[in-house]
Amino acid sequence: MTTIFSRIIDGEIPGRFVWSDERCVAFLSAAPLQPGHTLVVPRHEVDRWIDANPDLFVHLSRVAQIIGQAQQAEFDCARPGLIIQGFEVDHLHLHVWPTWSPADYDFRNADSDPDAAMMDQAAQRLRARLREDGQAAAHVPDEPA
Image (cartoon, rainbow, N blue to C red):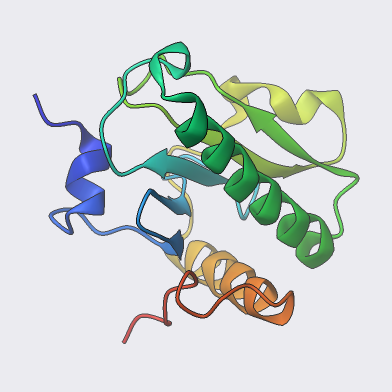
C-alpha cells in the first residue's frame, strides 16, 4: 500500500518542501515539535532504516545534516535534533528539528494542529537559508505560488 509520504512526494497531498533531489525530499512535518521540524524521506519506499541501501542512507544523512545546519543558523537553536523513529509511517524518514533542551525530543509535545502561517513562514525561512548557505538551487524548491 502506498504511504502518505509517497502521496506527498507524488503531489496528491500538499507538502511544504524545502529540499528535493533525485533520491529524496525534505518537507515540514505536519505535527512539528518546533517550527521548522523537517522530515527527510527517500523517494522510494523503504520501511525500516536498516533495510535502506547504505548509499541511500548516507545520502539521507547528508541531506539531514544540511537541513540541520540551516535550522541551527536560521532558528538560533542550541543544536538540531535528529531521530529515526518510524512508528507512525512505514516509510523511512529522518526527523530534523531545532532543539534547545532534551525536553524538545518528546514527541508527546508535537503540535497536531499547527498554525498554517507559522508553517509557511518556517518553510520559507528554511528555503531562504538553504539558498543563502549555497545549496544548489536545483535542490531547494521555489516558493509556492
